[in-house]
Amino acid sequence: MKKITAKFNSFCAETSKMLKKGDTIYFDTNTRKAYHITASIPNKRLTDDGAYVRAQEDAYWDNATGGYYSR
Image 1 (cartoon, rainbow, N blue to C red):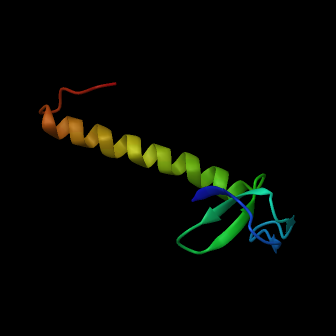
Image 2: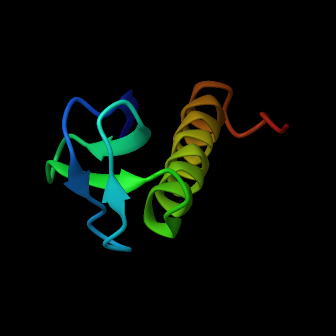
């Protein structure tokens, strides 16, 4: 998911709001869908990705230190 500037007019994949050229939008590179900046799907996904990354880092350091790593 990238935060980009719209290059042409379109519609939000979740809310069906008009996305005008020049608006700041979220663009999902996997599904190639555009979302309005206030849509809930991109915001939820961004926080979910952060939690996933933290869990992966914690698991890595737990394995590397023999389970003695804690935040």
